[in-house]
Length: 164
Image (cartoon, rainbow, N blue to C red):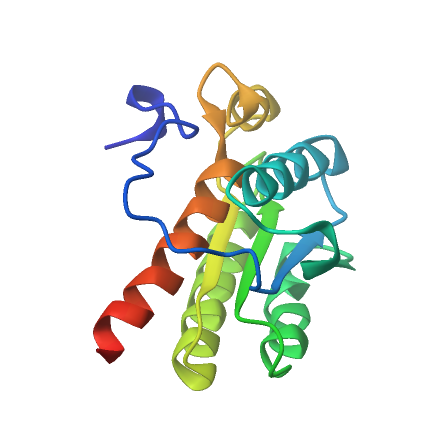
């Protein structure tokens, strides 16, 4: 389902694990700051609302979305970080740069999840316009940052379930 038909801030929260002692890293691209700061605010607040403590939410900034993979790796390498949330916005514009960047970041974050056996969440918007990005960063379609944080929490719960 496309986000045009879904509010990114509406999700089921039944059965979420206790995250009060879990440490999260949020890696934020500085390119398109008007969007990425709203994504960060959504992810941060969602983690707090579901039991995380401010001291257990680490933030790292990278210049752009392409750098999210390496920035996320540095946090994923830490044994105290249990999930990494990568936030960015690559807007189509007039070139195909988004195709290359989005594909590389998605592949890179997937590889990090597998390598470090922990959730590394792709919270990168891939809209055609700035308006569409803002609609998905706290606008009429909710906030992809909220969705990314809930995804991290749910994946931590699944990891516990799978280990039993």
